[in-house]
Image 1: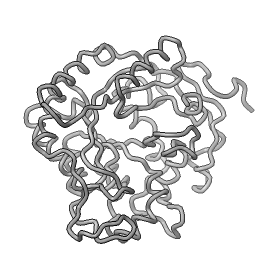
Image 2: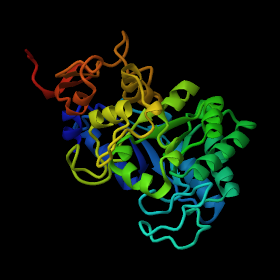
Image 3: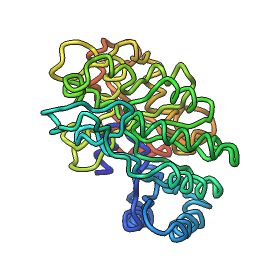
Image 4: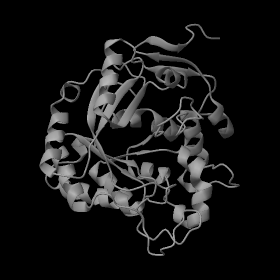
Length: 346
């Protein structure tokens, strides 16, 4: 899997919701010099049960050497929890009701989705992490889930500056103007998965109508507000950049970010939310490095940074927009060493 990541130009990833056994596997790969990707971990943190026991788990993560002294190839940045459900399961938590739906099997007109952590418990969790400098993030798909987390960040920020922790919102698929403005003010980052617009927008338009999708993966609004937004994949299963669940091909994501195109749909989804070519590249490079707490080491080609870079077969700034998605990586380098492709290129 890691070699396939390299084949598609990936040199760094964040593993959200990493388990103890998953961390141990990364450590074995690092010892065996087989870790061809820079990995930063958000350790999974159960949110239910005794708060004192949860606090002990948070303290153990903060005391882990991979957090206190991260290796250039492997380190811990914080923790992750789950604030709501998902879009395609009909369980994302929204401000407005989902609406009666045959698509999702919803019969209650008041149903707004599933909130798994109430604000009081969420506040306790964020506070425990912020005190130790851990980057907190939560799976938030619906706009109500996003606003709940942003509201908690605002509360904790009065005690501990959230900006310094590099805390984020994971997915943040549906947002609002107020949540975007608050995230910008607090210095909260957002990681989004553009491929979901491509895969799911047709179903979401049929369910909600076009107007309600105005702030669905609202990339332009985030960039204009000054929120640091990074492009992700939410890769969970299967190897293969397009056959995987979910697709981890970065050039598919870049194409979606620029064109707002969805499969089986005739027109772009709110084209006013599209990124420029320069923003598209930052979205997948230096912004993700910021999310990893590593923008001083990777994410751009500068003197003093690691020699992580790729060679591709076209100019992403000038090629036709439709050609972005079919970009091929000719070579991938990490620390000045070739990890994919050939050393001589024509």
